[in-house]
Amino acid sequence: MSKVHNWQIGREMNYPYTQAFPRRQFAFVFNINRCIACQSCTMACKSTWTFSKGQEHMWWANVETKPYGGYPQFWDAKILDLLEKANPDNQQWSGKPSTDKKKPYGQFDGKTIFEAQNMLTPDSARVLGYLPTDEEWNLPNIYEDNPVGKKGVRNELDKEGTELPVHKTWFFYLLRICNHCSYPACLAACPRKAIYKRPEDGIVLIDQKECRGYRKCVEACPYKKSMYRGNTRVSEKCVACYPRVEGKDPESGGQPMETRCMAACIGQIRLQGLVKMNKDGSWAEDRYNPLYYMIHVAKVALPLYPQFGTEPNGYYIPPRWVPRDYLRQMFGPGVDDAIERYNHPDRELLAVLQLFRRSNRIIFRYEIKEGPKVYEATLRGRKVTLYNDTVIAYGQDGKELFRTQVEEPLHVRPNKHANSI
Ligand code: SF4
Ligand code: SF4
Image (tube, rainbow, N blue to C red; front, side, top):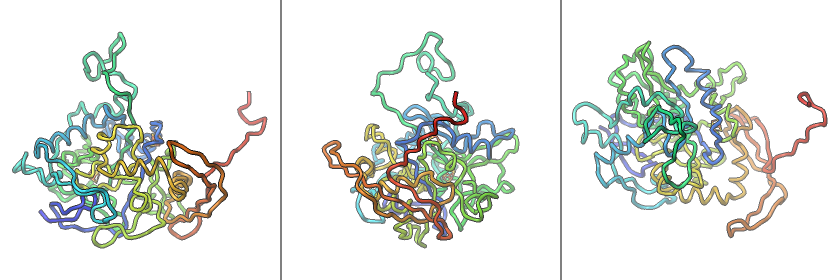
C-alpha cells in the first residue's frame, strides 16, 4: 500500500498504487434540485453503448429514487454497513469546512474502502466490497413507480393496493454514472491490471482483451459501476463517451463534446467538463472554468460519498428539502454551506447556473457581462436582487460557444403553427 493524498477526505490514505494524475480530468456537476427523472440520460446511454445481447442488465447511466431505490439494489446501504462493521462507531468527520484546499470539507477520520479491507477479508481482497446478487441487478428503477408488495416482498405487487411505511414524505432522484475516480477502486482491485486511467483526461477504462472476468472490479467499486457481461465473460463500464470527449464525433468539428447522457438531459441539470490538474492531484487554479468555480469557489457542488476514499469526479448540488443527516452521510460535511449558497445565490452563481445544457460542446471558460436590475424582493428573511446578466461560454479553442441571460427570453408562438388543431 502507498500513501496518497485525498483532498476530499482531507488527509493521506492508503492506496495499492503510488499516486499518478492525469493532465486534465473528466468531471461533472449534477444539480439534483432540478432532475425530473425523465430518464432521457439513461436511455441516451443505453441506446449508445449497452443495447446488445448480454448487456440487458447494464445501465451505465441510471437515475434512482432515494431513499429506497438503488441500482443495484441497496448498493450504498450495503457499503456503508460493511464500513461500519469494519470500524464500528468511528466512521466520523472532524474539523469544519474551511478555505484550506487540502481539506475543504474537514477531515474524515474513519476508514476508507482501501483501509478497512483487511479487517473483514484478511487475505482475499485489496478493497472492501461485495458482489451484488443477480436479483439486485434486476430492477434499475424499483421504488420510483413500483410499490412494494405485502411486508415489502420484492418483485411482488400487492393486488389490493399498498400502504407506505410511516415516514416524512421526502424523496429525490440520484442520477449516477461512473465517477472516473482519481483513486479508482476497480483499477486497484484488478489482478490482471486490465483497468487503466488515461493520462490525457482521467477517463477510467477496462481493456477488454486483458480482462478475464474475475469480477474483482465489480466487487470493489463502491458505486457498483463496473458490470459483468455473461456472454463475453468480461466486465464493462461507462467509457465516458470518449470519442465525443476527444472531439472525434462527426458532429464535433474537432471540439470536445459532452457525453450522450449529459447532452440529452431535458431537465438541464448536467454540466460536464475537463479540468486542469496539478502534478500533486489538486485542481489547477482556473477561476472561470464553470466546474472549478462551482466546486472550489462557490462550493455549491459536492462529491458523492467522499468517505469511500476513491476521490470521485462526479459532484452534486444537494437537494434542499431532504433531512440534513441523510445528506451529510451522502455528500459529507459541506452540505449545509452548499445548500445555503444555492438557496441564496449571489450574482455570479446565478449566471453560472444558466450555462447548464445550452450547448453539447464542453465549456472551458465563461465570462459575465453585467445587465440591469430586474427584480428585488425579500425571501426567507433575506433580500434578493436579480440582475439580467449575460453569461458567455467559450470552448477549448477559445471561440464563443453561446451566450445566454439570467432572465429567460419569452418566445411567443404565432397564432398558427404546425400542430394547431
Ligand atoms: S466509480 Fe467505480 S468503476 Fe468508476 S472509476 Fe470509480 S471505482 Fe472505477
Ligand atoms: S435527463 Fe436530466 S432531468 Fe432527465 S432523468 Fe436524466 S438527469 Fe434527470
